[in-house]
Length: 162
Length: 151
Image 1 (cartoon, rainbow over the protein chains, first blue to last red):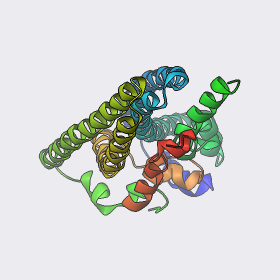
Image 2: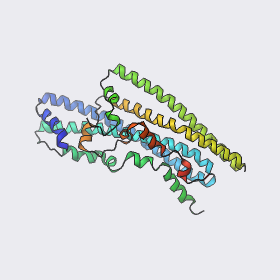
Image 3: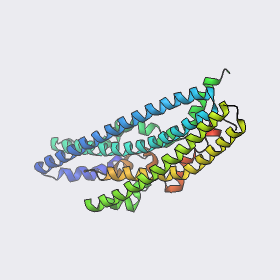
Image 4: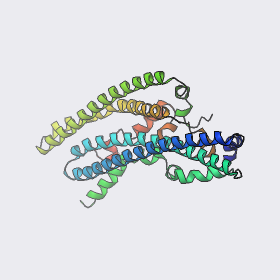
C-alpha cells in the first residue's frame, strides 16, 4: 500500500543531483519546523480548553446538588467549548499530517543521499508513531457523543447516594 | 485524488491553494467577517439562555415555581434557537481555520497519508455536507434528556 505512493517520489529523488537534493531537504526541513510549531501551539490551545471544560464539569457537578436550572447555564457553556474542541482537534490532525509529510520527505531525501535501499513499508511504519492517538480513537465519536452524558454520569454518581 | 476526506476533496478548497496571495487574503477576510458575525450572534443567544437559566434558578429559590417554569421554557427556546447558529458557526470556523492552514508555506493536502492509511481520523473534516455536520452537532441539542432531567 505504502509502496504505491512513495515509490514514485523515491524514484524521482534518486534521479536528482546532490545539490538539488540538499536544497529540497532544506526546504522540507523548514516546512517541518513551521508545522511542528503550529501543531504545538494548537495542542496547547486544546489543553487549555480541556482544562476549562473540566472546571465547568466540576462546577456543574456542584450546581446540580443545589438547583437544576442553575446547571443548565453551565451545560450551555460546556456545549460551546466542546464544539470549539472538535474544531481544534480537526485542525490539529491536519497540522500533524503536514508535519508527517515533511518529516517523511526529509527521511526519503536523506536515504537517497546515503544510498539506502528503498523500503516500501517505511511510510506505513512511521504513521503509528506520528498518529497513534488519531488512529485509535475517532475525534468526533470520542468527543461529541459524550458531551452531556459524561456530565450526566458524573452528576449521577455525585448525587447517587441521595 | 481521494474522496474520503470530504472537506479536502471540495474543488473550492483545492483551488484556494492555487490562488494568488491577494485573492487568498480577500477570501480569508470575507470568512473572518462571517465568522465574527456568527460568533457575536451565537454569544448573544447563549447569553440569553444563561440569563433564563439564572432567572429560573432565582425564582425557584424564592418558591415561585410557575414563574420558574416559564423561565425554563424560555431557556429551552433559547437553546433550540441557538442550534442553527451553532451549526453555521462550527462550519465557518472550520473553514476559516482550514484556509489559515492551507495558506501556510509548504502546506500539502493529506493525499499521501490517506493512500497509505485509511483509518486516520481527520475529525469534522471527514464529515460530508452540512446536514451531516448539523446532525453531529445536534447530538447535544437537548441537555434536559441528556442530563436525565424531567421538567
